[in-house]
Image 1 (cartoon, rainbow, N blue to C red):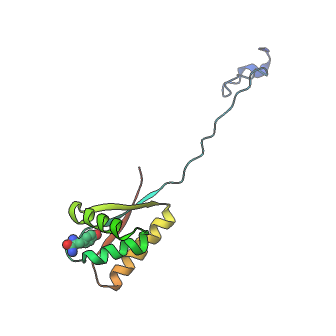
Image 2: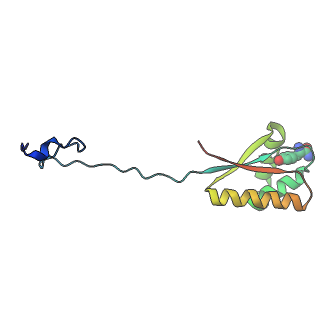
Image 3: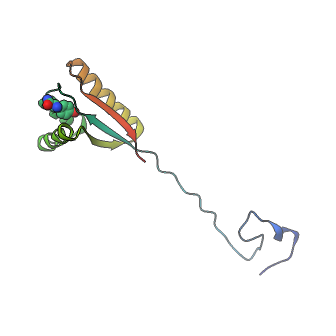
Length: 114
Ligand code: TYC
């Protein structure tokens, strides 16, 4: 049903003002950005210390922690978890503080996911 009223020249509305046509404007809800937390290799931090860090701060079991540590050791770095910004930032701070207190040069960073 098209009524030729003065409303029919509304160009911003897909139904062009036609009262007989219902249209929906879809508003997309944004997901919050997620952040990868990465552990970096170095030549000095003991392997057992890295394994302990992974168990303590990332809730992985000993076997998983050993596997992730070896990946970092061989490849230079690995993503150890993906979190909201606040959680990622907290993990990085916890790891960096723990490493510093034990005088190891272990580095942990975060990177925004695509
Ligand atoms: N490369 C270290 C060594 O040979 C071990 C290590 C693994 C250090 C992972 C840091 O994130 C790291 N002792």
